[in-house]
Length: 146
Image (tube, rainbow, N blue to C red):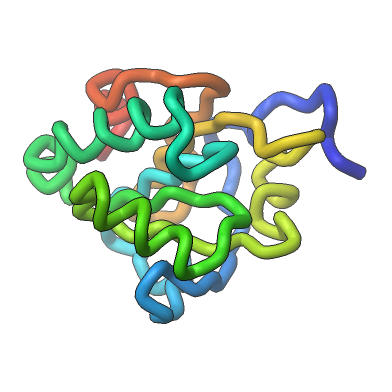
């Protein structure tokens, strides 16, 4: 099921664990990041207007993320090489995860006909503290950080 009309996962629920490869070929496992706030940004495509603006907004607020003990990851199905070019082109300080087959997007109700723009903040305990569709500001997302 593609969760065509679904809402994001509810705040207060345990974030589904996953392991994905990033744009450098490194594996990233959500549960290994316990103790940190984790921002997941599900976005439809690299080098598209709104996606670029959204990820660059998080880049521009990187000191705020670091101050809140947060790490961020962009997530979509593009391959490692495409992600690496996009990340380099825009000097993104955070990894882009390869979600081939949209498996993680499905777990997070962020997959439909295309990836549904969705942002999550997962607390240090693995609990979802923020979940929204669209393009919320990094400041709004980080208000949920603990």
